[in-house]
Every structure is written in structure tokens, then in C-alpha cells.
Image 1 (cartoon, protein in one colour):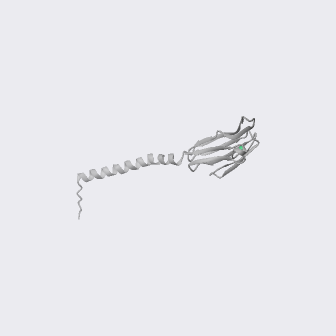
Image 2: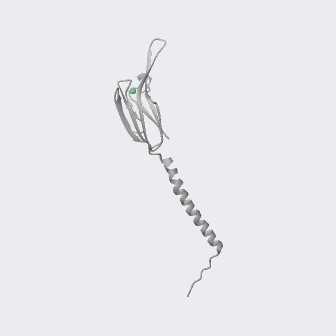
Image 3: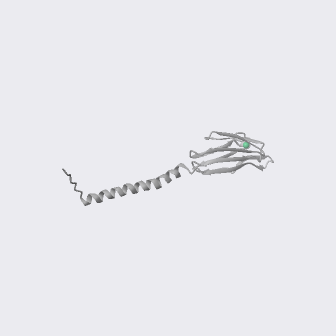
Length: 150
Ligand SMILES: [Cu+2]
């Protein structure tokens, strides 16, 4: 016994439209969905910075000298996911023990020497590079820099 199916033309058209929509939607998701994920997940680019230690001095009216040590440059911008390398070079000051708060990185910069640290910027935020021996005005600081991960 033979079975005969009757399919209306309008049903065929609707089925084709739905299929086109699904295929088109899948294509758009594959094409743009992954690039949107890449931009929010970071570029994975390599970023390298050279930071020197520097010192500013000023003479007060009473003849007293005030000074402050700084990282130069003091602000670094990176994207989330970047592979970041910081090369510190000691110019002013004998040594600067430092920590990068929130990233669990510690080190020391000595005059005439280079200290290198690397990390993946896997979280957004502002992270301070703090010299622990020049942390405030009483210690010729604050010697602080900022890494901004966006
Ligand atoms: Cu210092």
C-alpha cells in the first residue's frame, strides 16, 4: 500500500525561510560571535614597557630640599589578555624594592641594572606599582605607578 503526502506550497516556503534564517543566524554567530568574544577576552598581544626610576628635587623657601622618586612612565595602558613585560631600569636611587598590588608580583630595581617581570593581564582594573621603601612623602615618595587593564 502506497502512502501519499500532500505538502502545501506555502508550507514549503515557510520551511525554506526558517532554514535560511537558521543558517544565516549560525553564520552571523560564527563570524561575529567569536570576534566579539575575542575583543572582550583580550587580544593576547605582547606589550613591552621600559620603566626607569627617576627623581625630582625642589628647594623650599627655608632652603630645605624636598625630593620624590618616581617610575617613568608612571601610567601604563594594556588590554585584558595582553602578555605584558615590564623592564625596569634603575637610574636614580640605589635600589627600589617594589610590588605590583593585586598581581602578586614583587621585585627590586637596582641602579644601573635591569629587572624584568612578565604577566598576563587576565583581570581588568588599576594595579599599583609601589616602591616599598619610598611609599609616602616622609620617605621621598610616593613612588607609585599605575597599570590600567581595560
Ligand atoms: Cu623607590
